[in-house]
Image (cartoon, rainbow, N blue to C red; front, side):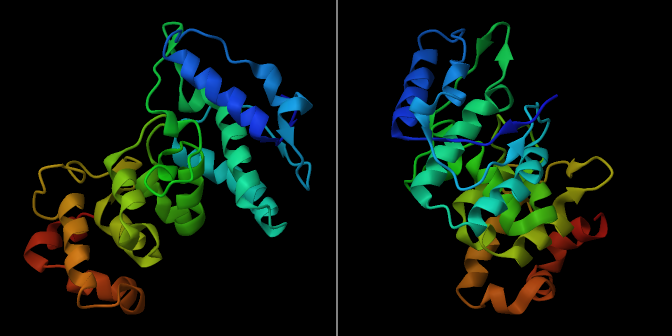
Length: 243
């Protein structure tokens, strides 16, 4: 399949994209206006012509890993946040079949922020291209614990990482989560790791524990070994032994 060139929507393009997303609430079978992906009326200029392939991604990790070197080239050229907002939305349109797949001829649309990038702190992490790419850039291979699922979905692991600064920004916390909860044989988190009932040793309990530890310790300074050492043995030993 021939390469395409990465583009960015200008404000006109972003408005057009938003109109299409809104239209899906009424007509979920409305076809994607794909001409907007290449029509200069809707596009902003980028400093580089970067090739990328049209493909379906099975996981958010696969998507973010693929896009990482392409986006890094733009970051090195100091592309600004306004332009990146247009890039995120263009990528959302380009890979729309991955982040909002068609089922029985219709798209199952979720909240708008998943498809239209919103820079507000409590919504920008919802975007199905921007946030997986951000998590991958911060945590690289350890981001698997957050990005194992389909691009269209937000797992509890990703939700916790995106909404908790102690997890989102700390590479050693992500490494500890991989050590505790990742099942390498199955390629996904261990059974019941994301239990929402806050059972002993689960992700929700781990997130609560981090909030407590932050009051006493500098988690950035103590590192991976320090974080593991501070975990209550009776609660986390079984998770460590099965890692």
